[in-house]
Length: 379
Image (cartoon, rainbow, N blue to C red; front, side):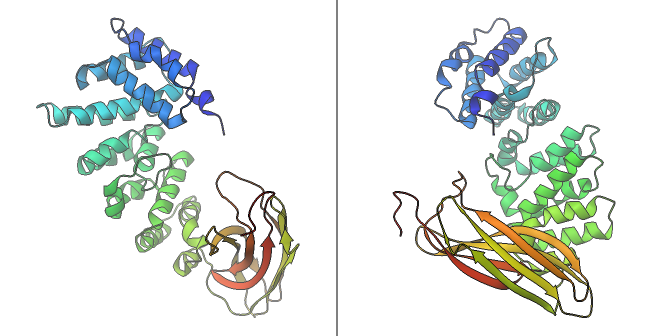
């Protein structure tokens, strides 16, 4: 992943300052000019917030004048795209919300902010910025955003889906999207057969977000899509149900054609080694055989039960394969699972386990020990 300096660094600040200076030549832009000296210790989001606040400080007028400056920068001869757009869109939404309730032009500012964000989203997504407006007035925002689903611009259509995701990464949570999961269904229902893969992938991720708390709503929606599919619908549904499928949710697996079957025999998993050094890997082999008289469509996963700091095990599911076994057919598994150090998980020494899961049913388990790293307590 790129470093913060590669995305919002000195060149980004200079480009933003040049663009705003061209659009508002009379503004001193003291805060923007001071920003480069403040970047070093900051994370990517903190850098964006710093530049957002600098824009708001340097352009202290009302929303209408601020928006005119942003449009002038957009339409000017100086480049106005890339990562500098993140703080710009954040400033637009914050400026509009700050003005709400203080003038008779409140509704006009709010609506224009949504429009301006949609105009800028092709330069760098406005998905984070619209969440400020969604949080402030979800009903008004969603009414406008639903209209984006018919835009000729795929970036705007994607913004409608991506910006309203319940658990959009890197973003603030919008309470209304969590408490009213049906509110965004008109958006994804309008877009699941979109011509653009860029949009369809967002729809699938949107559906997957909803599935974390609202499995029944998601399964009903997915079933309706599969009843009126196009050539891409099966992929959208499968990707949208991926969390439920990993959890072994029977109805989600059934929608994908993986129903509980009899006559499936699992041998293993057999592990080597059974004591795994920190940073090493455990290898497991297994065999899945269809002893029944009918072909069996199988989704085969494995679950690693990690020991946590308190000694309790917690399972995480990993995909292996999907396959169809004819009667008497056999599928052999030979996989290694690494315990190298990563930033997204901390490993603790002690008892661990691997299980196989076939169509949501656990059919084999084996235990192993993860040894402590040098200097780490054995627990």
